[in-house]
Image 1 (cartoon, rainbow, N blue to C red):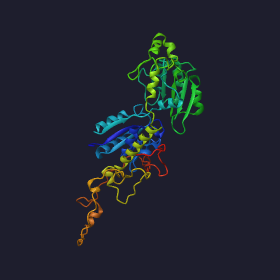
Image 2: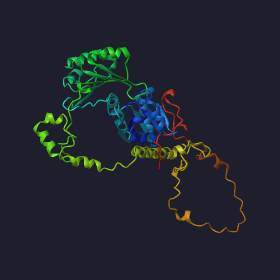
Image 3: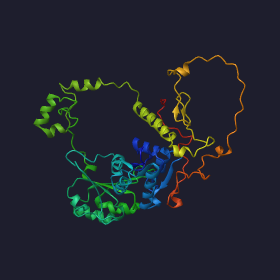
Image 4: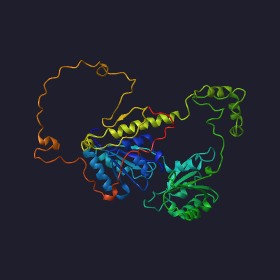
Length: 434
């Protein structure tokens, strides 16, 4: 890496385990993690960050303070993980930071995350794009907040489409939101899902209507961290999709002739529910039966988490030379307990021990040599006292540390012990990692 790197990581809607694998990896690799404790679950950071990573709570600092961190990363070639809630591309104030990083000559990337509207729909058990009911989703917010809305981007204008809407940052003005939705054409009986802190431990999901929305919000005192899903798709069953219809063909599946004839002749009747097993659709079932389902349940997830564990430990142990120079041989390093039947990770060297059945190198496989006659030992000259004091400059002054104090309030720095407690173990479904 010829320059520093800043990764804008989407941490997801709240739950620590909803971060993407790439996002978790970027946090594990980071020398500095900048995150908002008010919006991102602390466990999401503690689970993945290195023990020696510097943690900065962005909720206590300004944009200029964050830019100072980026300038330091450029000068010292550090890796920074800037962790945002949800997906960074939505109301994340990312663009101004991204552009600043590019001007500083930093490598910069955006790692997408799971948005709160997707999490709310999943918890409610609803598809937002139901065939012939709603095939579009509008993401917006109510005008009148801290950031002005552009001309033509008003809730009542979007509501005229009558499709599904996901409305952010509007809970504090729910009465105004109701009037805008009514003005756009939604009736009072239009279903609404109210999602407060979706996927957090204290989440609250409420089902109401536009006519009762304002009263519901006031009753539960939902002023912040609340999202609204609005639209008929939240209640309608819709019609059958053509995608998996027996009469519909794809690149990987042929169409059943009889089902296709009926689909063309009477689409309404066919979409209501064409039986899969017709006189000539037996090949469909046979194709499914020929698939290999011999792999044990959960095999894929176990393999995925095993890979996550491997690169997490590698990223944590492969500390940059500038940071490792501050660690002495006597400095304790946290080592996560690993079962005896698994490979042991040598965190000190960052190199795993080879398995017992792995081929030996010539030096390892060579038989022991005959013991040579001992030679008279020569006295070893004592090292100068200066060598024990570390590297000194020509003037005799100690070298400056690589990390200087961040120009932020002291409270912005969070204590971090790093790693998982020894009593906590990753759930691998009872399958050994390896």
